[in-house]
Every structure is written in C-alpha cells, then in structure tokens.
Amino acid sequence: SQTIHQWPATLVQPVGSPLSLECTVEGTSNPNLYWYRQAAGRGLQLLFYSVGIGQISSEVPQNLSASRPQDRQFILSSKKLLLSDSGFYLCAWSGGNTIYFGEGSWLTVV
Amino acid sequence: AQSVTQLGSHVSVSEGALVLLRCNYSSSVPPYLFWYVQYPNQGLQLLLKYTTGATLVKGINGFEAEFKKSETSFHLTKPSAHMSDAAEYFCAVNPAGKLIFGQGTTLQVKP
Image (cartoon, rainbow over all chains, first blue to last red; front, side):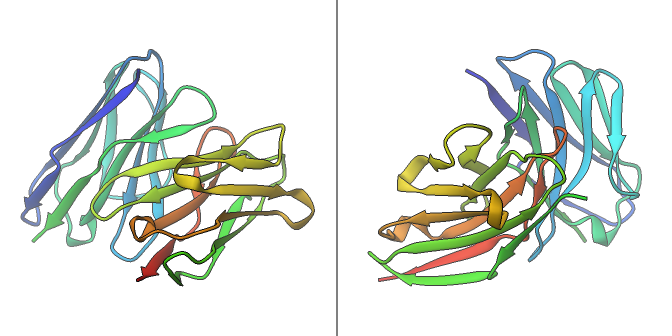
C-alpha cells in the first residue's frame, strides 16, 4: 500500500533562517505531489503541485519554493523565513482523482 | 472558477444526536467531491468521496454524504454523534487534479 512520510514534524526557526521540509511517497510511481499550508484559524491553501520530476507549479506568490529531485520526493524550501511563514504544512500525493495527505509539519518562525 | 462554501465554521451537537455539516460548491464541470477530517495536530484523513455513480456515498466512521446536483450541495451526515467525532471537517472539490477546500467546520460533541 501507499504511504507518505513528511519531516520534520515540528520546527522552530528564527526569522531570516532557511527552511527545508521533505516529503517522500512509497508504494506508487509517478504520483502528483502537493504542498499545502494551513495557517492558524484558516483553511488550506495550495502552495505548489508537481506532475513529474522537475515540474513545479506555484499557486501563489510567496517566500517559498519547491523542488522535486526524484519521482517520489518533494521538498519545500525557503532561503529566508518570514514570521508570516508560520503554519502547518501538509504534503500530499495523488495517483488518480483522490489526494492523500501526510501527517504535516508545524513550522513556527520566531 | 470552482469554489467550496461550508456553512457554519462551528457546529455543536450532543452525543447521540444527528450530525449535519453543510457544503455547497460551484463548478463549471461535473465535480469530484470530498470530505476530509482533521484531528488536532494531525494531517487530513479522507472520510468519503463522490466521483461518479451513486449520489449517496458512505464513508468511514459511519459518515455519509449525498451529492445533489440541483442544489450544488454535498452535505455530510451521521445519524448519531460520538465524542470521538469531535474534529475539523473539510469539504473539497477536485477540478483538474487540484483540491480546493472550504474553510472548514469544527464539530464539537457535548456529552
């Protein structure tokens, strides 16, 4: 069966520091991959999605970037974090019309 | 553009009472519709989905939802609430492979 792993689970970073969140999917090939953000008290916002290696689409302008160096690996990055980057980040994958989520990563920028 | 509206950001029910969480969508094409549940500090878990076929779909934990095209609705129901149902619930529509979420409804279950 397919599984999705996301790490780290929690992260506290100072303003201006870099960020790297990683996500890997097992048990499937060529999945669509997604990064969502859930800010406190708000809904889920799609940040990036990828249909293949090196193919990244950005949904909103922001301080973040994404990369897909391997078929089942998706990385969310920032060179310099802002306070507004704090939130709950969710990686997800789909192989058809259903999207499945990882356990999420809590990022607090201080 | 596709969108999802969940009526009521907070819903409170007594244990054993009917749960009804409302979701309306707008879509220019026949939608795929989903309900997800999120327990505190966890990711989203798929409750149920509608793609094609039977308009009444059953999911996990005793939940079900009915797709009503004429009303552009996909309301989530459960006949009898349990304390463990307390969580946040998200309705979503999937146009072209990307989920668009509603703002979520927090379900409180009172003993």
